[in-house]
Amino acid sequence: MDIQWNNTLRTLDEFGAEIINSYKKELEQEQYTNGELYNTLSYKVNSNNEGWVISISLADYWKYVEEGRRPGKQPPREVIEKWISVKQIIPRPMTLKSGKTVTPTIPQLAFLIARKIGRDGIQGKHLFANSFQGVKQMFISKLTEAITQDIKDYMEKGDSI
Image (cartoon, rainbow, N blue to C red; front, side, top):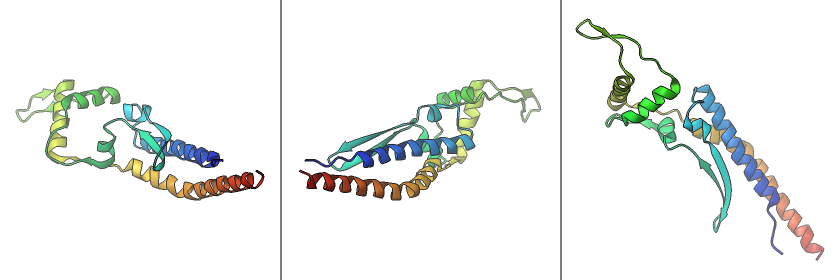
């Protein structure tokens, strides 16, 4: 008879859901709620030869929100244009060195933002790491209890056979 890990799997499922909920709260506080990162968050509990794995699905650019970007290469302007559109940013008039006032187009604004990021970089927010650490501490004892209960259940069933 194989051991059933029902309590453990249920706790891992709760852990995955809580990671997503906590991360969404962090994103909400930083006003990252109307983009792909917020809207496509998901998780899945899988098993393999090593044990169980909670896989978190995130938009590709999460690493830049998390870790930031060093100065150097500019990000793709198309990505910045999409961000401007999602955030509904309206370009403001600006005064050039010549004294002329112009309002940049969306592609021009995207170029200016990309140039600034390339020159200065951006600082990471570490939102996922913060979420994970907070949830991890809460679930360590729950997971220990679930594993213990699954083993107890297995032992009790083993005695009755």
